[in-house]
Amino acid sequence: MLRAQQKRVGSRPRFTRRATLRRSLRLLGSFRFEQTDPGLFYGGIAADTAELVGDFYRDLTGRSLAGTVVLDVGGGPGYFADEFGRAGARYLPVEPDPSEMHAAGLRVAGAVRGSGMALPFRDDAVEVCVSSNVAEHVPRPWVMAEEMLRVVKPGGLMVFSYTVWFGPFGGHETGPWHYLGGEYAARRYRRKMGREPKNRFGRSLFAVGAGEGMRWARATPDEVEVLAVFPRYHPRWAWWVVHVPLVRELLTSNLVVVATKRAAATTVAAEADSAFESAAPPESS
Image (cartoon, rainbow, N blue to C red; front, top):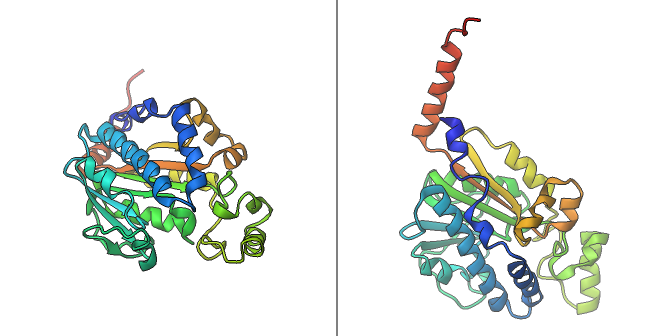
């Protein structure tokens, strides 16, 4: 039973058909607009996120996102609302910073002010919980990942996507000087621009590695099934980089961990299978 559950999504998620070189170039090219035209940048990221989540949710459940609640941890001003709305989902952003919630002048019904490290929702509350390019802004990103799993219903989907510190965009607007240290990069930005960077190292920007995400995925408890770990902005044929230490830190711009909580019935059945196997008499030779 357990082995069947692990094979449900398969080794080739349907999202792989979208993971082309053209997509990679389009997304990576949009990063130059992150500060100057955030609507353009986040609009492209939002469309890609909705497609990614929709593909993995269909792989997992056989259904579209229509009628689901999608909880976006660190949703900011709500750039993703329209894209998930088009997919038929109810989009619910959570954001700790009130200035970020209103930065783009958007209004999202039901938006919640709260911390990703202590989500103000009960256990097993939503079908989908997603976070895109947020974990690097949180001092305890893996606490946030655990919180996201907590609020996902058994059989639901969690998508945790974050910017890798030693990747090319790890320093955000202070890059590429972050390779010489986050504090140095922040001071240089202040001298050059005459103001503090929006993403201030040690306050609102933290060094999170790709290896940390791989280790967290391997250490998840038995009731959690990791469906995929891959570099978000790479074409499918380059996903191998996440499995090579050091290389993954330098060549992965963004790491994605996709996981689900097994339904209670499946967990019980797996435990029963295990107990039966333990109790079975040895085969005679």
